[in-house]
Length: 266
Image 1 (tube, one colour):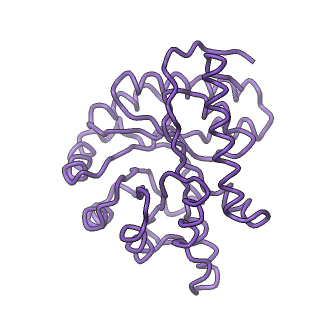
Image 2 (cartoon, rainbow, N blue to C red; image 1 turned 90 degrees about the vertical axis):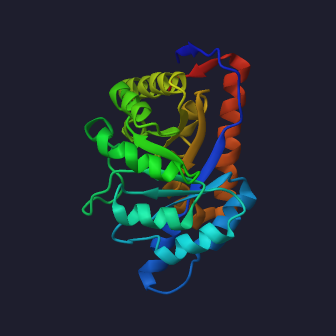
């Protein structure tokens, strides 16, 4: 294990729980159970700091009514994941969630497969971001830990980024130690660059109990958004225990990083 000196004071790390796949299970029967709003309440009780829901263009899981109920009922901030489209902009401005995370979206994909290409569309993204932030909605951009994309995020004046952790998680899953270290390096360096540019740094995608600790130890990251693994684990242990274990895992990783004075590598 190698370590990078961490001169940033420790700060608490927020846990956002994505409830999309509670809705996936509900939609399999086309009825009303399980209820994503009930799942959100249990996640909050277990230690979630915010709730994430992705209103996809094809409404494959979360639906408009879900977003309306979440926006009006949650006791913690709502993070609305959304594509960069006029339809989603209109919905977000009507619901006014605490935050919107702008993500790439293709109808054929099973899940979000890569980060948003901010660099190639910064001219169109800047006014889109401004319209949301003018209504006091924090905007984050879901991007790969690529310096060019981070610089573009700064240019479009988003307040935050969410670093795509999928490549790191995939390398860990495949037992590719060198690849995992390389991808973790990219996350560490990307988080430092973004924080230095004044961006709030979040991270997510593919995180689970086994791979989350090195990411949670990166001091510049202030929020992790996790969903699929925890909803899946809830089948076996219940949603409260699933979320609670993740809460304890990331808090322990952050405390350990502070004690050692460094950010751990996989």
